[in-house]
Amino acid sequence: RYRLLLENAEQLVLVCGRREPWLRRDGAAGLAVLRAASLVVGLDGCIKAVGQADVIRNQFLEATFERIIDCSGKCVLPGLVDAHTHPVWAGDRVHEFAMKLAGASYMEIHQAGGGIHFTVEHTRKATEDELFTAFQQRLERMLRAGSTLVECKSGYGLDLETELKMLRVIERARKSMDIGISSTYCGAHAVPKGKTATEATDDIINNHLPKLKELKLRGQIHVNNIDVFCEKGVFDLESTRRILEAGKDTGLQINFHGDELHPMKSAELGAELGARAISHLEEVSDEGIVAMARAKCAAVLLPTTAYMLRLKQPQARKMLEEGVIVALGSDFNPNAYCFSMPMVMHLACVNMKMSMNEALAAATINAAYALGKSDTHGSLEVGKQGDLLIINSSRWEHLIYQFGGHEALINYVIVKGKVV
Ligand code: NIG
Ligand code: FE
Image 1: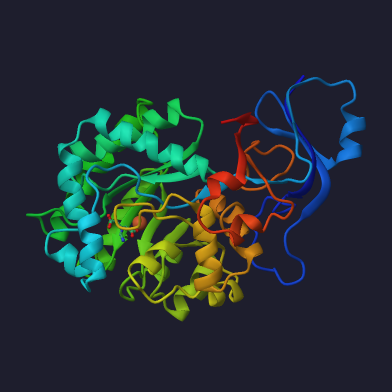
Image 2: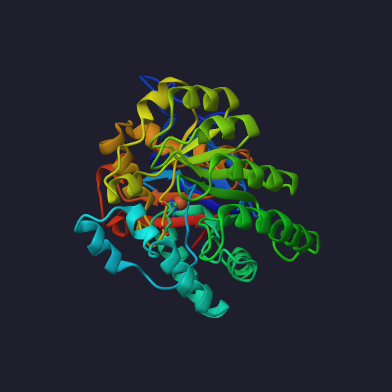
């Protein structure tokens, strides 16, 4: 007895035939795509078979399935992985969007007490239930846009109490919702008002991280990654190093914001510390790119942010040429209000000059790698989790080619073999 049979898909996009992150090697090779193919998910939610439709039919003649979906004329792809989001907060910033359109920069608004500070103020005041309700609705919209695994950051509390409130909200969703979550402690997202960066750094190292460790030991909150906003006027390289090292000692994977608005040598630091991933990288140095490739530190590129803030585009092509593992994230937050990884892939292709194959790999297997989950997520292989999309088109590229309105294109979103 099995959970699900997807039968006779026009194209079944495996993404890759091995568990290592799919680097570039694009060119003519491209992704592994099967035609007239079927896929079986077992009762444990994992993929049991994938191959030619007639072969699978013969192999499973005696089997029964809880659900069978005829995929004739449709494409099956791995569920999308969003490697960077800030989805827990109260109070939007539509008024700041207007200010930015009128010419204000991200840092001008931040230094005037808006931006992250505005969101912190509202998030501190919100109750845990209010935050959870809003968060749940956002996750639901991400799921509808095809994301089945999402990285979720705290970082709008800055004080221990509110950071823990946010992490509890993330934990609650992890337990109650189908969507997969990788949770990130981002207490160093900004320097709280009334504190210096050094005071904030000490507070995180001496108070926040020990508390997280204690809660983890008691099995109450499960945090996967540690993040810092390493930026001029926020956390400098030295504070970033101290926080990330302390986080690593607490057992967290390093995954941080770097080299976004100013060149900070964040990439060099991340490579040295064994970071899993660094996000943004619009201002990364050439040496930083080489160091990241060597250290197998993933670059999480965020096309929505570069677009929204009219920044210089990250050098995706150069990173790919140098062998960096390039991943993508929506960066969903009150600044970049985008839930949709198909939209993100589209922007990555048009603005960052990635190919559609590269963008899909970046939004699946490489994003899973950035979260330390590429051995269970991010591609369609026997043994991996049955997280899938079925799209109403006979060519998978429509998921990137069409921009906006993906809900109508995506017929089914499936997590662990279950239609959600
Ligand atoms: O990744 N750059 C820092 N953090 C977020 C923005 C958060 C916010 O503005 O609320 C980012 O773009
Ligand atoms: Fe971010």
